[in-house]
Image (cartoon, rainbow, N blue to C red; front, side, top):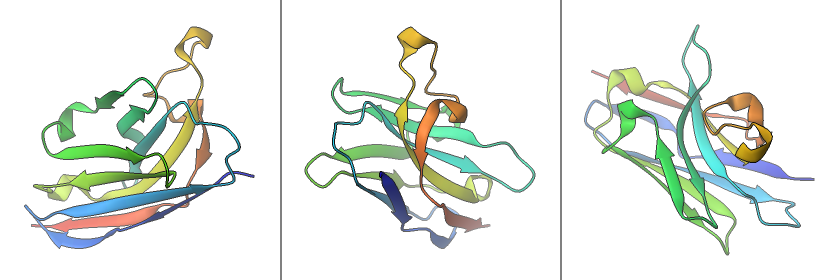
Length: 128
């Protein structure tokens, strides 16, 4: 059974940095995609960044481009979200996710429902 566990959230002031980690266990195959999503109070869950490890492709939502970096450590089955120049609007619960429905089957990296595995979430709070 695949399990994802996030860590690294916390409270920082604006312009600060945080690094989130997601450790996956239970995999017997290589995941096709790993990602980070976030959900603020009263908002829908939205994609932040995804990475296709074997293809070497990454995608970011527009608001975090240039500030956030997703990376993947294959031997450790761990992925990270390096967040810099944080803004109050980045405050949210951050979730890691893995295994997306392939695009050839109608899946989308932007759509949370297309990801199979999820972590429990880690809170990020950015104060002004």
